[in-house]
Length: 336
Image (cartoon, rainbow, N blue to C red; front, side, top):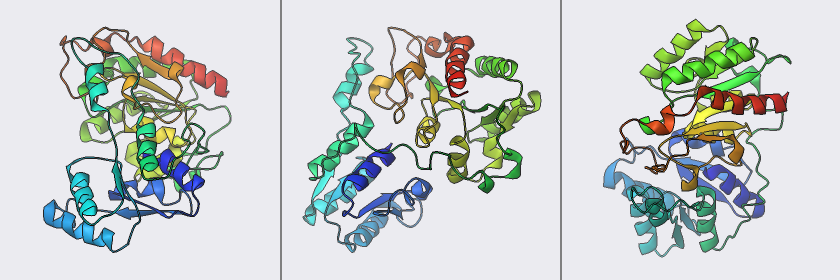
């Protein structure tokens, strides 16, 4: 979610040199963003592990003589680095995550169902406090790639070329927590309906772990239109390319919603224990493409990790497959 904000900052202040510090996987998001945006990776598991590692990282960073430090994470590690920069009299600002408002949003009693500031706005506020106000509402950022999408030639041949009569559909059915995952039997019904409606379509599955791979392979063996994309693609860079050619992506409240958003792909997002009011909807995703149940207990969690109050995850089980498919069809028909 940082990408559109960093792009906007770099575009609005072309003479400011920006360095993004993150884990190595994030390089694909930033290294070709704009000429005045650079990327610096930090391996926190090995090279910069623990306090000793963070001290070494600080020395490396301070040698670059930055004029301002923006902490867009505000966790223990970044807070420690921020403290070192403050002691050294750097100009520093950090993100306000509006925890009080989010706590009221997910409260079991006396719930306050109000839209919280989005992460995009929270990031922009950090730069404003550093003296770089940006107009995030009118940001020129649309996609990491040109309008025609990323180069398909860089993908494995099994992905193939997109034919004019084909619909390319992405599905990312998993998330970090059970409270954000649409039940697999119901997701199977979604796939069945999509295949029935679009016999010539290609459905690409995105995900990670061993259990996910087994399910993807099962679907792929069951339906000739389905492809386990994660088994074929080599990392986030190739996932971004493929997603940029999709007609629609179906995702939970997960990272894949945001990755697809960075390449201007419309996303139908399914929300269970969490809620878009927490401020985590993908960049410029449309509210009418959100699928969620109207339950008084929702949301019960900001990130989806809390156990279900009711014990039955009605927030997900009550969503009918046809509701999801109809929302996707509206986008597919519009694209066609």
